[in-house]
Length: 78
Image (tube, rainbow, N blue to C red):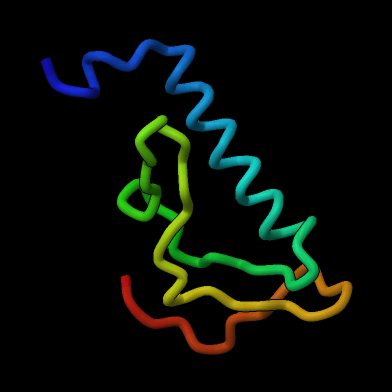
């Protein structure tokens, strides 16, 4: 059986909560706030214990100080 068939909903929920906690840390708890800007399923990696890890920060923006928003002046791609 494939791994997707082995994951029960409880484990899938734990993975989703882990992703949300990671985003909360990046957006609110880190001393340098980070906006990922390209979060998608292919950028979520799972370790050996199926803990989610956010990856590929190529388009990320860092916000200094107490900033909570950023304006994107140039949008590219689709």
